[in-house]
Amino acid sequence: MSQSRATALHMLLIALLVIPGAGVAQANGTPAPNRHRTLTVMTRNLYLGVDLLPLFVVPPEQVPAQVAANWAMVQATDFPARATALAREVEEAEPDLIGLQEAMLWRIQSPGDFFTGNTPATDVVYDFVAILLAELEARGRHYAVIAEVTGLDGELPSNTGDDLRLTFRNVILARTDLPASELKLSNAQTGNFATNLVVPLGGQAFTILRGWAAVDVKVRGKSLRFVTTHLEAFSELVQVAQADEVLAGPANTNLPVVLVGDFNSNANGSGTATYGNLITAGFADAWPLARADSGFTCCQAEDLRNETSLLSERIDLALFRGDFTVDEVDILGETAADRTDSGLWPSDHAGIVATLRFP
Image (cartoon, rainbow, N blue to C red; front, side, top):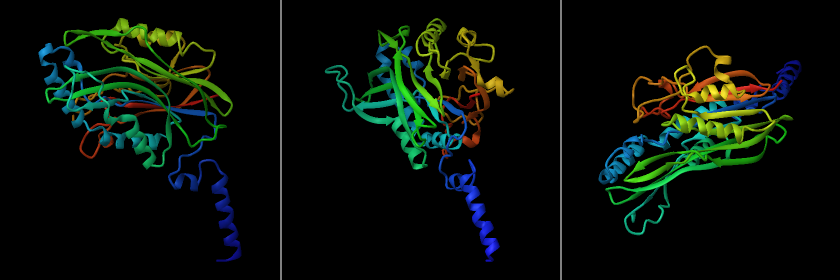
């Protein structure tokens, strides 16, 4: 090689190393650093793996049989396999912050003692958060739990002789591979709602406890608050009250706010009052600011094996209040190509990822 060509090659390599987003850093699969005043956020309902509604309508004597059927469905919807597809979404989108809903913890006690000692089940079968984080680490994507709020935590007997315990969680994940100058987190907060739906189950009153999680964020000198929540699906009155609690609680700040989650309020014109109330309270919706299509995010079949997507509502949202612009927004996990090798959709919901830019 001539000296002039060697010099040119050397200069090209230097250029690739110093130009933001170019060359080696992306080619080897390492996440790109955030060199601009942008924040990429994601919201993802992981789906607990079963529709629990039948559990609340069967007679008390049929509850153990229904619990067994529910548990069979959870196993069939195979979260470890789905976590591979979900991790692929994160790998491609590279969000700085992720709000997770239905980040389940499934535990079992075998044999069960529900009718005798009724000690809580502690043997973990599926920890959705731990499984997803392990998949991300395997892909070289480094995230950690920043805030976690526990909601409904209930245990029931199965006719197989086991006790099954499910625990709902809302979780905030954040990238751990960025310097504090690009992503600094503080003041993690969580809370449960004072207003929750109470339903009968097995002849007793059962509270569907829900909540929110938040963290303060500084991105290259700009500060904001990131909040995720999962509002009630089966009572508009409860849902509206919960949204009001978010507005009066974590969203009640002078900081700009990014609010993501499963709001169970269809934003495309036929939903509950919740969506309109949030917009009236000063929040903007990232999707219609950047896209003209429907943006449906809910919901696939219970077993996740429907061939054609059934998404027909837009209830998973990325909202913000403050002087942001929307660089881009997209849906995740909504095409047939996003399914697992065995044909499962990653979740019964699609996810949303949005990149917001500070002025």
